[in-house]
Length: 103
Image (cartoon, rainbow, N blue to C red; front, side):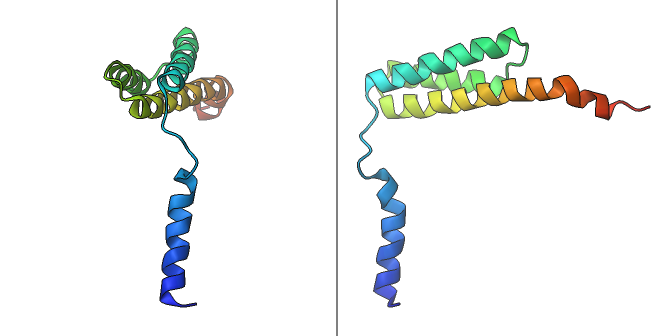
């Protein structure tokens, strides 16, 4: 394979996922933020909230207020993922802790 063909293949692999993806709109960012806030509320209710989730939520709200919708959506999606993971960890710890107890 020629060097140019390898280069073009690499560029296509890197660029292709971003093609056709429109920039996030205010509605996209707000919907992602709403979902993240709801999941964080569930995590708090389960006493499983993580500080990084709150940090990501604050960054998403700030970006949304600044009209930076792409960053707001990115931060809200990160907060949503963190909140989901904190709930998963809380569920897992309900049974796994028994294995850690010294007998």
